[in-house]
Length: 362
Image (cartoon, rainbow, N blue to C red; front, side, top):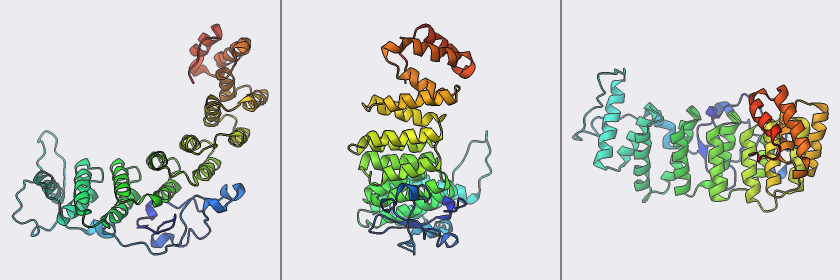
């Protein structure tokens, strides 16, 4: 898949009855033609193709999100509604447009009046377009949608389209991601959310907000299917993607029997490719703490140090996982680390070398 593909190219969500969905714009049509679900791919193929949506639904559903930027706050529609335009302190003058003052003046008044109507929803749309991160606008929108959706459940799908549009312009908008969780959960539209994060991560594979969204889906709603394959793809694409390692740890804890010898073999394979990758050593250490044998990992660490004496993660791993009978080895490793291999933690390693039996956190 072309690395130039950006999440902002995908502005509409098409909800389908299968596990897949498509985010599309005219400039990106046809880009997903070669992508297959993970369940049909072997490891070699998975290492080459992104975990993304398939083109089974070619035409995105039209939603209010499509014309959100053209929504005008009609003065006549709000005629008779008493409000005061936003006034700011004279101490700090901000050159805001008349529209901004008008829209947010109405917004604060509507919030106070408790009106929950279609025009109030349109008002929040315009306010959010003007200020994507306004907590007040998003909170009012949540309250309005929750009220209107009681008689029109289809609004929840429209909300997914609206948040997709906002996120496509600002991928790291806290409020939009939080609102999306609320809408997906309220409308029972969770099955397409993994694919939504696939598209977001296609533009930035370390997008904290997308990973948090995915984490929520797995942790709170048990959507673990395909996640081991997905995290493997992300890790093989970037061996130092700490977010992918963290997510994989969550998934293996929820999928019965996933923390096994095969998982250790996978981790050691990554060590072979990037022995100085601290993330994989931490992952192996955690597997050891969960009860899995790390004998092979300790042997691999020794092997790594024979080739690269300055491999800090491998040496630290041996210190963390030394037995009580290996005090002399611990002292030697700590002295090497303190001698210049790990200057940032020099004082710590000196302290540890003086007392090898001292507990170490990790």
